[in-house]
Image (cartoon, rainbow, N blue to C red; front, side):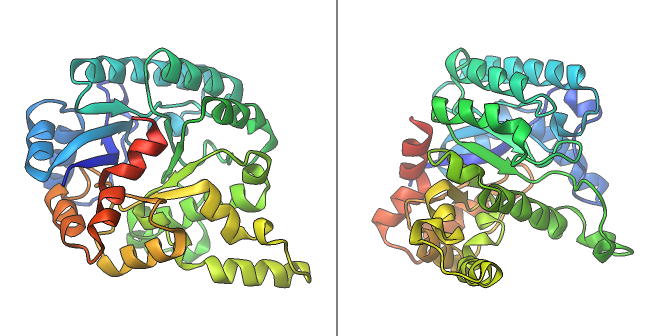
Length: 317
């Protein structure tokens, strides 16, 4: 079955020097990741053809400019990365699409760059690699950004990035850092800030995408509702429940979680219109991901929506 993959990464020669996370201790594995991040031709296309990935939506790998302290430099790097990606997409518009890279150090500049990327470069939304120098997207400074997102009607993929600090629970356990668990905790909390902080209530048409089967959130909906009402000491209106906001405003991808049980639970929790296929290339094996979604115990109509139909609707293909 044909597939659209949404969490698939690249880097530019300039960003590769300082702004690529190393999620493995293996020198050989990381060297292969670096080689594939920089490739848009043989390696990537061969993989796509082999696994039935018709379209790949490309985004700058983490952390990108989210870790840059100088706002002007971050804005310059993001603009350059988007121009770089646009040139690659233009070479193969039938195989590649783009998510904008944004310097969230400046909300106004990020909104303007998103509009340029969507209206001029033809990108399908943006991917943001977590917090930016300790600032999260529910803060008041980002209201103008979310106004522009809702106006443009494009999704924002909230992707893991480095934690703003290092909590004691991770002390002396470096193996828990990064993608094994810390990035999940960070990204899930970031998404919940948008839910509980009112951002997604103020902007009800905004669509957030979470990878990695929703960063655990689909499996916590009942408890989020229960504990929020307990915290307030009162019943919430049905559309004000955390679960209702998540179902309305958040879609997820299967990137990095090739588990049939988790897929079935996510579909049951969020509905089959809110789950989409992805790989997390080049950090995960595309063949494993393709085999997983092809053999998952779901109906063929659901498989079609997950593999490409939902992405086509959300990204306006």
